[in-house]
Length: 152
Image (cartoon, rainbow, N blue to C red):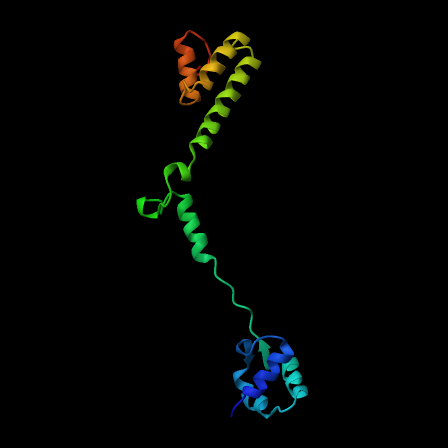
């Protein structure tokens, strides 16, 4: 029993490709008896013929890999293409550190821990790249005799 014509007609009615037409295995004989489009429409209404869902690309593997990379896996030398500067630009690193340092300096000036002239002094030092981080800047301030009151 050939059902190629029936599948073709069903594909036209369902507005899908022939490969997406599904015929219920128990009712193949009844569907093979269908000759006209009206018979095929009845079979579709009764649920003997259906259109399979469009198969997409699964994101499961991609999501799993992303989760692993977030943990720091799969980032070894073999997975890298591009210089370290391309992957994490120097400018981005600089902006991150300088903005943090300037924010802390503004807070210290606002709560009057440092005077405006001291603020200007440390601001320019930070701009010149004297400090690696906020903690380095704070330790330098303490060595220069400023009481910051961080560890009390």
